[in-house]
Image 1: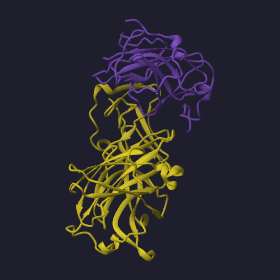
Image 2: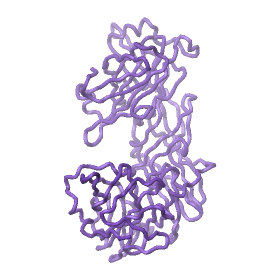
Image 3: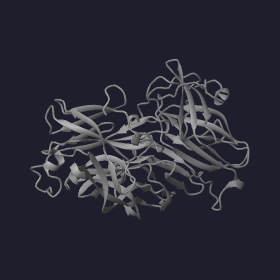
Length: 338
Length: 178
């Protein structure tokens, strides 16, 4: 149930829907593996004249969310002419407070697509009649349909006075893009989400030698996730809403040679003399892109104590390092200077 | 310029423990470094910088956030911009004398402001190794006042120091496993 004054505030914006159009909001508990997860209907929101909509949700009202540290709230168009699906990711911090992230920072933004004109869309799934009668509610399920891609995590750039290593031990802090689409057509990014399965036991250590300009790449499995509708007599049909979600580390890894590295801003130079753990988030400019379902998307990944990029100066040498967009402790990427 | 070598403040005694968490200084992401030092050595950790996002700020104390064991914080100084380097990780002794460091220091009670150059203030931490072992400072806690209100802000600025007998088989001082 949406609340008026209490709970977590959510903000969104939809293009391509007129004032007064309605979106339905659902809370979807974390998917842990294959299987169906029932969506919790929260109610409807009405799009205002500028395409904006606001809502509040209180996770404590739902038993299935109360013990979850992460769930999504989805805004879905059900008018069968336009397709719109976007989601916020809500995470509970160690102190119990919830944080909200969407594809526009804390808010979400989505462009409604005209389903009828989308010729590439399959019509094998839900018919308007069946989705209209979803009296038993909705659910999402991860299907066995998989695709594999190499995700760029971090780049290293060394010269002759240092080496580097990147310890990728867990995906719990890694955020990868998820895509949404209708009946397999025109998938689009709906923002960052955590991987369904963690990889704590299957980390990878990348070592970069002298004079290396390389990106650490890991193979990730994506799974197709589908929304289902429960109609009368326990009949279950697909609604046509689909997502590609990051599922698990698939074990492959390699280092890709990269070309141009950023130009150093002198304000971001530091001198180091011993092993230093640096760099926080790889961004689109410094780690690159990957493709899922033909959609080009950028990789983001955050370093924590489990995921470390370290530079190791040669013994006895002082090495000048430079951060790409900040000082080296906060930079997206760090490189050794001449 | 007057040096702001504040021995008493390093203990954290001057800042009430009830200070609210501050945000006037830009948070940093978790980071760290490791070094090998003999017992009795006094050195300067010059890796950290403070960036003011809501001015003015007066730094009143700096202390370690636990785990440091045989590491003693003996003092700190703040170096304003401009500097040749935003930070210099390791300097001999404390207070350090190094040609790469400018002479200017923030005087005791001096106010820190937003630095348009982006370099911020270099924090020079005087550290003495007091016992053999592998010691890890987990974080730094900076106390400051902003508009008269005392605050504390914690930075995930890890430092591991190994005394020579406590390096690993490769002769390295490893980061702790977490």
